[in-house]
Image 1 (cartoon, helix red, strand yellow):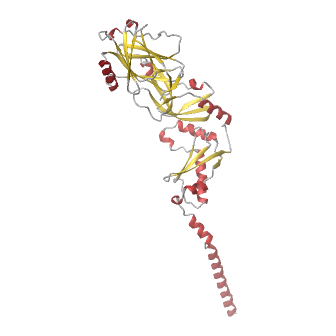
Image 2 (cartoon, helix red, strand yellow):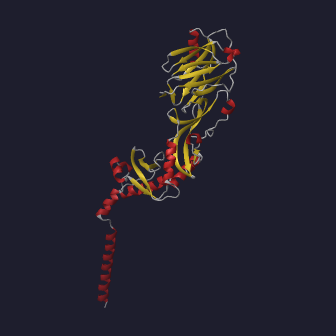
Image 3 (cartoon, rainbow, N blue to C red):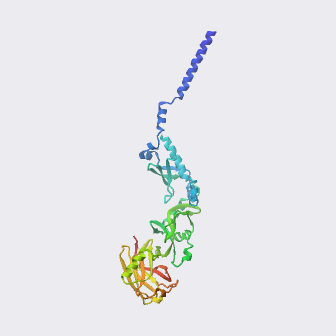
Length: 409
């Protein structure tokens, strides 16, 4: 009996050892599993551009809607800077999650802090983007397929895009720009200027589209024009359909040409080197009774022959004036003309500094009259009408142009 018990006990011990060995054997990694563990240790440093192009698809399908994206841009546009970091682009977030999974499935241990996703939003309707590997200057572009919608309408999107594309902007230092223009003597209204002054319906001519501006992104330098740079957000039926970036919204002294080109007219002070240079040139020519010095700058298309008429008052009818013009090639041209109906008129082909002086050095500028604000103009195309002020002088300047258009350099 004891012998039988010993045999059974030995059998149980051997069986237990066999089971233990079997379990332990099952827990050991196979050769393939060891290889997989080794592959998943690849880091961002092992990633090449070729591999990135291979594993990242050319299209991502997402459940985020375009309305979700539009609402995000709207929040960013009207959120204080310190709070923007708390906002996350919904489409970018969803695509980043998909890319993180793709990296993992391809054996890469790459965190979301080591790459970024950007969804482009100007002109592309938020249907394209790219992934960037941070610190490696590697990118892969892709398109985006939205599978759901909750308010965004493609027909409205096309309508708004076409309207925005048809808007006529001025070219200000390489940026699209809109101007609110004031006469030089209209300091009261000019001092009230803000970036909200401009009425975008003037450009859109469509009350069904609402335009909102982002918070200030940066200001222009001193002098004139003065203004800020903004993104413009275009809505139809309360849905954001288009974002136009880097638009200068400006106030300026001057006027707008008949073809829509704004012309800024800045007064050049006596302390300015340009003023001194032009005054010396006039003095060398025997003229020192200076009325004023002005810089005229057009932001867009001008004409081959522009008739510029400086109004200096009827008291000078019959008097002769000299108008010195420093051209863009730094050469000078001087115009001698007689004042008729209070106006001294010349014809130029470009804008740059002008200095006006009386031919008679004994004539006092104290006798110059202030020109009336309702100065009469002829029926020909008058495209510039601006008021210039210098001491006791307030003149009216306007430009008459022919029909030959050209693009300024």
